[in-house]
Image 1 (cartoon, helix red, strand yellow):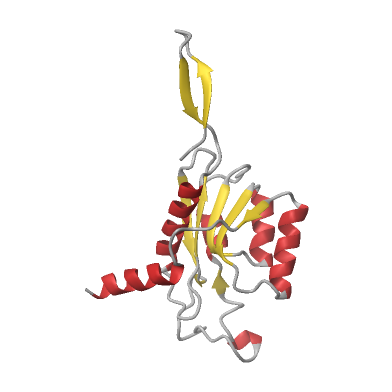
Image 2 (cartoon, one colour):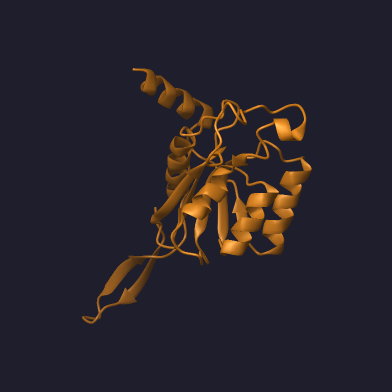
Length: 184
C-alpha cells in the first residue's frame, strides 16, 4: 500500500495523495516483472532482468542479460569457464546496463532500478553515472566475490541506496511456472 500524504484542496477538504517511495507490494510487483523480463535471456546459467522506474512508479525501460548486438551463440556462446576471451563475460550486456541504455532520459536522478540480481561493479558505475537513487534487488548470488564487494562500495560511496526486500514468493518457483506455461 502506498503511503499517503494529506493536503488541502481549494475547498479546504483534506485529500489523500500518494507520496513517492515504494511499498513492499510495489517492490514485489516490480521484481516479479523484472523476473519475467529475465526469461528473455538466452543465457542458460544466469538469467537477469531489470527495470527502471521513475519517482511515480512508472516503468521507463526494461533490460535482460544478453550477448551484445552482432554476436550470436556460435561466435561467443555462453561458456563460463576457460580463458576469459573464450567465455561469455567480455561479450555479455548486463540486464541493468541494457535497461539504462534503453531508457529515454539521460538524467535518471531519483529514479529506481529493480533487478533480479545485485548489480556487478561495471553496472554499479553506470547506475551512479545515470543518477539512479535506489537499487532494489531480488537475489545476491555472489556476496563474497570482489566484483560484488566493489559494486556495493561504489553504490554506497555515491549515496545510492541498495536493498533486498522480502517477497512473498520464490524466484525459482516463478521461473519454473513461467517456463512450464511456455511449453503448453
